[in-house]
Length: 312
Image (tube, rainbow, N blue to C red; front, side, top):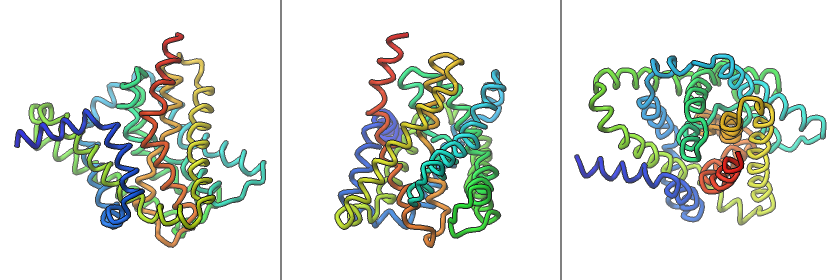
């Protein structure tokens, strides 16, 4: 058991490298991606359980020392930013399905990796932690009516259907994690906490394998489309990051950069786990290709954040 714990702790320590390697392994080793493709939904479910297992909801409430800022960030991430992205694309007359995919990405919650990455580069991990957790819990009630109702994007599923699927994918893991926390107790959780983080990393790597299924074939068959989608993903991620940092510039550099980080890194795993296979394949491909900026951001953005912070 100790060997397993040490291995998982090592995985947590090497998280950034494992994540970057995982997405490329899934891309360039198609049998590996195909083997993991059909278990994406169970992987995401287990991920949610483990991520929420590491969250003390009482601690989250205690962290709400800046309720106005947290409320503003949640409203911006889940409502305002997708409306801005949609308005900009609509005003420019951009109607490609990648554009619809980008709007739905903007409705997503902050990636659960945001707090860890924020701390890694010296940003405000406390705010990132609270907003990432709360945005995940709120997502089932904001994204479906916004994307399917107000913006009219067709995902081959009804608003109540999408809300129910997202609620189950978030709510059931929350209930299980609360039960596990009570069963295990604080001492066991403290001892195995870093190992749980490592298990999360390995599950995300496995998710990265599965989500890349078929992408290499599409890249070889339609390189312009896929490369254009990857460019859209990076451009969209950076645009949401910069736009949000500008909007929250008055809250101090660490909070500003943390807000941008969360806006640019959205959790697409939840959508990929619940969106029907009959949805527009370009929209699904957009979700998949957004994994590239998400998985590679620890490498790409860390030196930029360190340079910005060095000037403060």
